[in-house]
Amino acid sequence: APSSRYEKFSNQGEYKKYLLGKFPEEKKGIEEYFAALKEASIAYSRSYVFKCIPLPLAQLLVWTGLNKIIDGGYSKWSSITLQQALQKMTKNKELQAVLSSNYVLEGCDPSRSPFVLHAAIAGAFRHGAFFP
Image: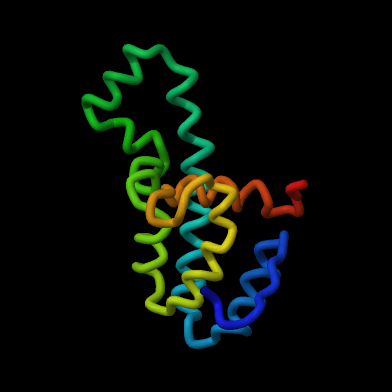
């Protein structure tokens, strides 16, 4: 758990700047985290293509592996947990805890939550959304 209090921002640019100020030695990991959020959020949106095409076509795409070209990285980000992704990005346990602090919105702990779900939720809050 974080050893001190941290602020959250609805604007990801402000949040990133804040985190870089709090963890200057973790610049590479923070940059990687925000790049991954963007990539996985886009992949999540693109995954809806498979819900709009006929099942036989979707099955053919999966069988041939072409789905990985179309899905924009969904396969990649849905097969890694939030915890696994954060452990690859930074060894700093406190930063990992801060970055995964809204895991309760995902319905399970970071060791079981797919990174793509975390990114989709973060994306929903990116421009100032709120949760009652």
